[in-house]
Length: 420
Ligand code: EPZ
Image (cartoon, rainbow, N blue to C red; front, side, top):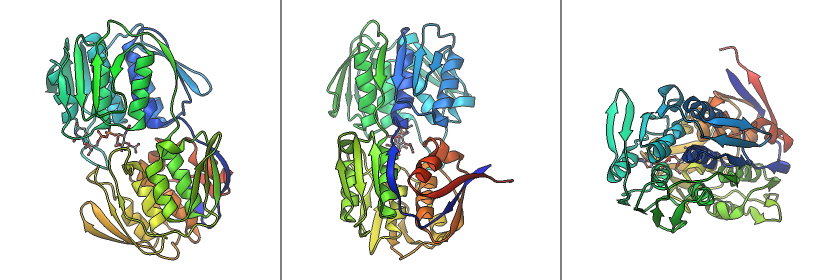
């Protein structure tokens, strides 16, 4: 079992490379199932989630070639449409092979992903949409067993779901007729998938609007696609820079993907600007200030940045109310933050009150999920003394070598092996 050992107190200065967005790579890799021709993806980061999805796709017959920071996928010999529990239980994004398998091969047997630390993570919206498109769906032994063929349909999503949008679009692009999707997710990672599908020859209108119109085509061809930068990774380093009152240039980042986060940081007098090749965060004159946060769908404040921002608010002057509107259980890092001296009160299930303190103290803490774990790392960067952040396998799912990037900016952090 590995952990991060962190000595708090250093300000962060320098340049960090922002990798391709984890939450774009995963659906886009599944999208490569829609054609027999090669799909080359650039700006890939070798996250453990990407490795798990690669294993699943290979088990279906997908050929995958790894180059330095790119992947070439070829689904010209898919031998199975069975996505096993072994993979889907490890990484819920694997569930997104359902749409493309059903759309191209008219059948799929995909393990239900199950819940996770942050919530029950139901898939009812995915199945509602596929049923509207004519899929026969049975749930047997923990698997979604779906058969086509599918037909065009008009689909109304009662709530925004990133995954249900990905899955439905990928089911529709090869489906004869017109599929209209009302209330799709607008996250940049969804737009990135849609843009790649159009490059492959898909007929999709209304990209970036609340109504997608997809007209099925006979076949899709291969393409080359560069993954958008990871706005959540960029937000992570922007908040690290703010908390340590440093200055960080985030190479490859795009400010227009993270405006809601930038607006919150500007309340704390952090300067954040788009430069030629990336985003500059200058917090050398920052005054960390209490700010109300309500997470919501894009372009609102992202739920994935909530735990990162609570660590900043824990040392900001004043009281901040943080409301988590997307997931039902996304405050699990709070008890660990309290062990570091944070003053946090739970107002009700999805709302907390944070009263800033002048200083946190280092402690041994436990990650419970990906973004909660990174929130604890950020707190440890400013805490007095040493911290040990355990169960960092959660963090490796979404960050490629976080410790080397942070130490490259001046943080004192190392990956250590714990006996237990
Ligand atoms: C994606 O998860 C991301 N994961 C999440 O990032 C992100 O937090 C989330 O979108 C919201 O932006 C990946 O892209 C791999 P949703 P997803 O479907 O698609 C409910 C991270 O840390 N819902 O938009 O699973 C659901 O329970 C991860 O990188 C239903 O009720 O999220 C949640 O409350 C964490 N029924 C809300 O909708 C459904 O059928 C939003 O979920 C589907 C979802």
